Length: 157
Image: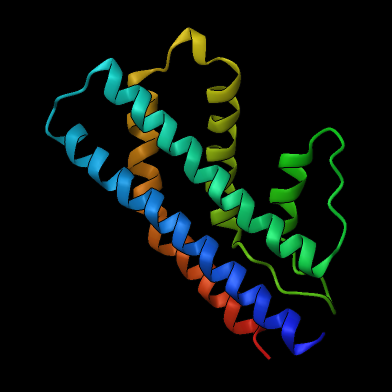
């Protein structure tokens, strides 16, 4: 790998991680509103929107990793699930896993929500489900960001 490509890869990863952190910052504000007991349909919709954005930001990070190391991003059916699965895989001689098994499961749940948000939004969101997922996402924030840092350390020459 050329040094220039590696530098660009890490710049892309760091930029995308900053985007992810911005999403978490917004979700932290929403969490405060939620814990104040002011749950409204507008708040639930807003939280759903930001949870959707958070997963999309993670997926953009996954695309950066997959395209740099594997150079093969098929857009066939099941693309989103396949991309996420690939991030938990240690690909011998290519790259280490980006996600732990636990964080893969957590991200898969968020991926599923993103799908529901995009495809059944007109039916409305379930207040309790959105609140549960927000709490879970915020609880797991540190471990998944640690997975990213660990990955960066492992692939840094």
